[in-house]
Amino acid sequence: MERHYWSVITLLICSIYLEACDSSFKEETQASVISYQNIPAPERNKMNAEKVALGKMLFNETILSKDSSIACVHCHEPQYANGENVALSTKGVSHKKLQRNSPALINVAWAKGWFWDGGAKNIESLIFGPLTHEDEMNADLKEILVRLNQTPIYKAAFRKTFDIEEIKSAHLARALAQYVRSLLSNQTKYDAHLKGNYQFTKNEQSGLEIFKRHCQQCHTPPFFTDFDYHNNGLDKDDFFTDLNEGMSKGRGRISRNKKDNGKYKTPTLRYLNTSSPYMHDGRFATLDEVFDHYTTTILKSETLDSLLYQRITLTKEDRLMLKAFLHTLDQPNSEI
Image 1 (tube, helix red, strand yellow):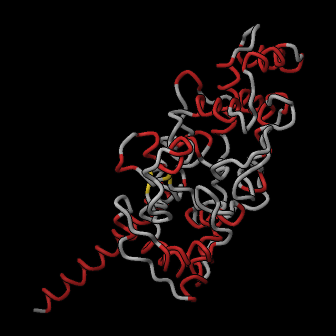
Image 2 (image 1 turned 135 degrees about the vertical axis):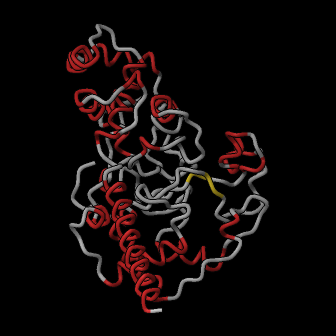
Image 3 (image 1 turned 180 degrees about the horizontal axis):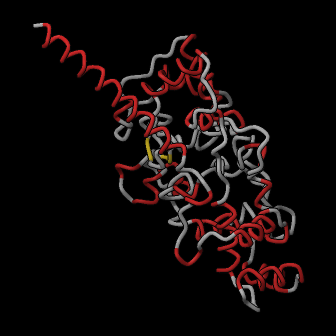
């Protein structure tokens, strides 16, 4: 009997040890995923530091807009997680209110589709959307290329980085795409914790446990998004209409599948504190408004995500601890 007892104890110790090793291995693996060396890029546009630098110049260049009044950076500002601090921007050349919130550009190289509904299949093609949309930069590509080819600094920069004499739209898109892919978030307290360089506070640790129970199925670490599309119960009746080019259909507008109506891409929770307002239309200004939605106002519909059939109950203390954890995903004082 005594021999059997010690065998059980030994097995338990080994089990705990292996579980700890497995957990440690997963954290170390997760910590190394987001890095410049791991950025996925198409074969025709492999990451290159000079192209990234050129892309950054172009990202801040106003001559890419019709009237030379705005640049990409005006709606994707570094201090707001490369997004914007308003629900719907009016900074485009038409100054008309856009129909979707300017998304945070963080770790987007790993996404499977771009825009809130996945309307772009790669970042190179994504670039042409805001460049040419009449309410955004409204650029005439032929005119933009003439401007670039007549600007000595760009003529020289493109010659150096692409080994070309004439700048074409593909070169413009590739340089901008390289810069967008280089916008990483991997220096948060959470990342430091994974590497063993930061110990969570009691509230942060408790918040992590709440996060694991209620959030991480869609906001999956280490990106804190699954890059997939979900209907999280914001609307019920208006996403089957073709009005306004079917914008309210969300992912369904792109896939043409009714089962995707009302679905939008899961946003990352990294830089959450500086990427407000929240949701595809920026309807919620604060995290408490987001929590209120998941606790009390989820609207049921045919395409509501099954994970949200049961509303998420968060006490006042739960919210406090969850916020503490989510703030470990902030990355202050960093250039992106």
